[in-house]
Structure formats: C-alpha cells, structure tokens
Length: 112
Image 1: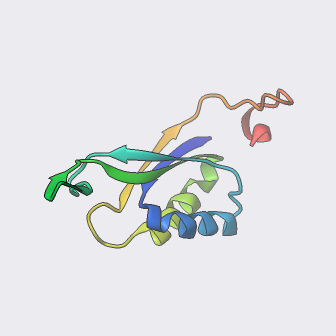
Image 2: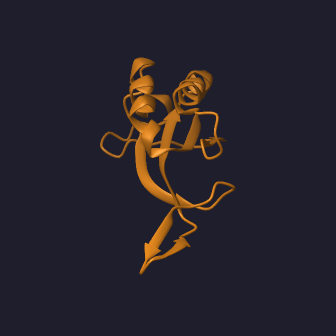
C-alpha cells in the first residue's frame, strides 16, 4: 500500500476529484492548506498599500491505495492538475506500513 499526498491548486480540485472517481478512487481526505514557494503569495491591500502575504492557498489530498493503483492515481492528478505554470503543486508517494479500519478491525487491502 502507498500513501499519495498531492498539493494542488483550488481551481483544479474539482477536476482532480472527478478524475479520481473515474478510476475508482472514491475515498480520500482533503484539506485547505497554505504554503510558501517559488510562486509568490497573494497580495493584500491595506490602506492603499499593497503587501505580499507570502501565503499560497492550496488543497491537499491524502489518498491510500494498493501499490498497483499508484500510477493511475498519479497520472489522473497530473493530467487534471497541470496548468504548466509555476505553482501547479507537488505529489508525494510514501509506503504505508499498516492500515486498519476502526469499525471492523480489518487491515491491509481489506480495509481499503
């Protein structure tokens, strides 16, 4: 099993969600995050002066999948999340040692 974390643009989130549903990924966690990177953050105007807040708002998706599904998931995120501009985001894939469904006690792929 693998954990896929993707940090993507807000504007691309719905497209990515639909692409994941098309390949059978119906469960994942997402949250709003802020970051700092090469792309400059939002600007804030206060009393006529413009300030760079330094924060870049994004969506973070966390998806646990069987190892054989990793390429499909990464491909779907890449296809729908890419604009070709700085700030499209990042994808991180890490191994999962254990995954347990609390309600039933199932573990591993059975818990997915």
